[in-house]
Length: 369
Ligand SMILES: *[C@@H]1O[C@H](CO)[C@@H](O)[C@H](O)[C@H]1NC(C)=O
Image 1 (tube, rainbow, N blue to C red):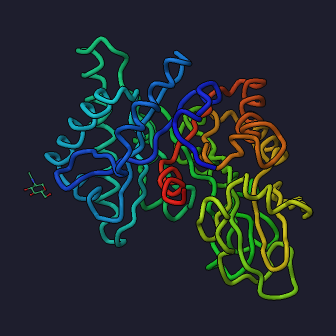
Image 2: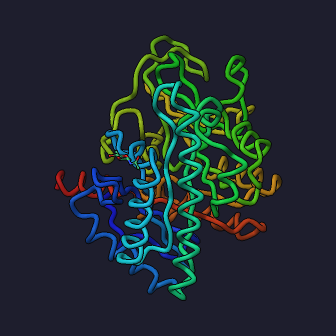
C-alpha cells in the first residue's frame, strides 16, 4: 500500500495536485513534509511521460493561524505571492491551488472573506504579469473549497473569486461525521429521508448552491472520494440513520480512525454484502457493528452522468493514494475508481479530471516498514 509519485499513472488525470504546502512564519510558501522537495521532482517528472499533464501545488492552513496572518495585509500577501511564483517555477509546477475555508470566529469572517478575495485577485494579476514577462504559459490558479452551506456563506465571495480562479474544486464529501450520532453516508449525491433538517448536506445541493451564487458551472469540479467513512453502530439497527456513536477502527494500511481507503473497503467487503441507498445513489455495507458508507463503480457512474447533465466542468478526486492503485485488493484492475471516472468523462464532454496526491501515507508506510 506504499505510494510514491513514481507510482502515479501520468495518463489518468488531466491535472495532478500535490498536497500540501503551507505558509510559514515569514509568509512564504513552504513544504510541509521532510521528503517533499525530493518528491516534487519525481512528481513533476511525470510530465516527461505525458506532455499534456498539468501539475499544481496545493497550499493550506496547517494548524497555526499563519494563513490568516498572510491574508491580513497587502505586504504579507505580496510576500506570499512572490514566494509562490518562485517556488512553483523552481520545482516545475504549473500552478497553485488554494485549499481554504474560514475557520475563525464569526466576527471576523467578513473581513477575511474580503482578504481571501483580494488574495485571489492579486495572485491572478501577478501570474498574468509573470506569464507575459516569462514567455512561459501563465501559472494556473485554482481553489479547493467547502461544500457546506454555512461555511460557503461565511468564507467566499463567489461571484468575485469565480472570475479569478481557473477552476473551483468543491469538496462534496465529508458531509457527515460520527458526531451526528447516526450512521450516514459522507458523500451522497442527493439528500435522503433521514436528512429532513439537513437538506443541504449533499453533492447536488452544494453544487447548485455554488452555481446559483454565481460560479460558472464549467469552472466547478465535483469532488469524488476514493474512500469511505466508517462508524460504530450502537444498537441492532443497521440501516441509514441507525444510531452510531464513534469512528470505526483504522484500516490496516492507512491507519486513520473512521476513514477507509477504497482498497481497504474491498478487504472489508470480502464476504460482506453491498447495500444501496436508493434515494442518495450511493452504497454502504455493515459487518458486526461496523458501518461504512463509500463510493463504488456504480455510484461514480451515476455521479459522472449527473455532472455531465448539469454542465459542470469535471471531476476532482481525493485522493489517488486511496484508490486500489495497484489492483491488488479489489480484483478490478489498477485504479478501478479513477479509471472508471476517466472512461466516463472521456465519453462525455467534460474532460477535466483533477487528482490529488497526498504525501502523508508515504511516510506512514516508511515508518511501518
Ligand atoms: C502586516 O502584518 C504584519 C503582521 O504579520 C505586521 O507586522 C505589519 O506591520 C503589517 N503591515 C502593514 C503595512 O500593515
